[in-house]
Length: 129
Image 1: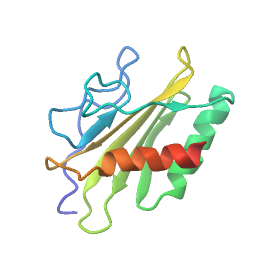
Image 2: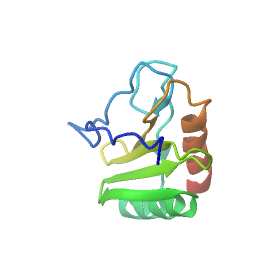
Image 3: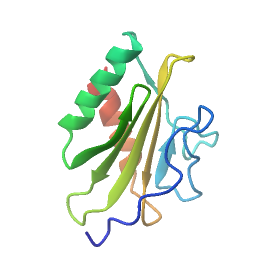
């Protein structure tokens, strides 16, 4: 793919945190402090195990999606755009202490994503509930 870009090397959970968003507006994170990038984490009332299993089902139901890494507290998926094959890296971290799933969705290339990353997380949130 021409627009796939390289997988970032800062993915994953580090001391309970997902990577910070870059300055560009094409990223959202539930752990971000600034309004431009901030998005609410996913909440659940089930067991953490059931929550991550439900989340995996939701992700797999979405088009052009590949789960790359999964563990009991972490999911990393790549989403490809339909038209040009742009790849977005989307991470979910099950924060057992806060009983939420922290989220981060970021485009690999470009500046603006026209709100795609925020919209994706809201679509996942709606299906996850």
